[in-house]
Length: 234
Image 1 (cartoon, rainbow, N blue to C red):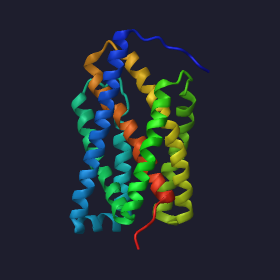
Image 2: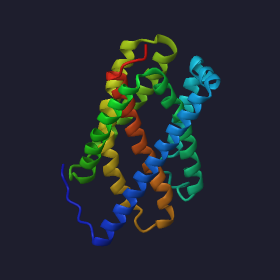
Image 3: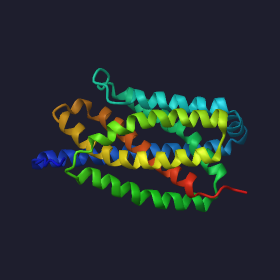
Image 4: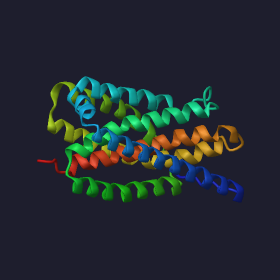
């Protein structure tokens, strides 16, 4: 189903500012995660203890999930922008653990190739979601149960099966799921702005919440591409 939304000049300017700030916060999150990973890799003893203990590593994974859930748009808490910002920063720091594992396991050129492949794919999907008149709500509806299944599968495989084949299959599903979610989330950002357009006091919290969704889309696509095509260090 396609629908056309007509924006006024002021709405267009406001929406553009909202989206630009959302991407800025997404980039801040990625920068924090990268710095966190770098510091963790420099602290070799701490890094070893984290990655050598599966329950500790996946415990961090579960904390990340809970933080991500708490950063969803909540009408009762949306005015507390400090809470949203602090949680976003903590989440980004914890995700640095995942980045550190990636940096330790894969060849540097594989990481570069995965990044170079992910950036244009993410950009094209984001542009499509932002510009299309097609309703992408169904993607979000389908993705929710898939994501629950993925979380369970990741934990089961990481703690019990430890199968490379299952990990590959999970990575393929993750890549497809978050590719769809990238377009969906970009369209949702427009809807969120229009709904809260006249409530500027909550825009900061909304921007952080939307930035986290794009951040999740990007890093999950990147890590999936790396898992599928990347070369492990000898």
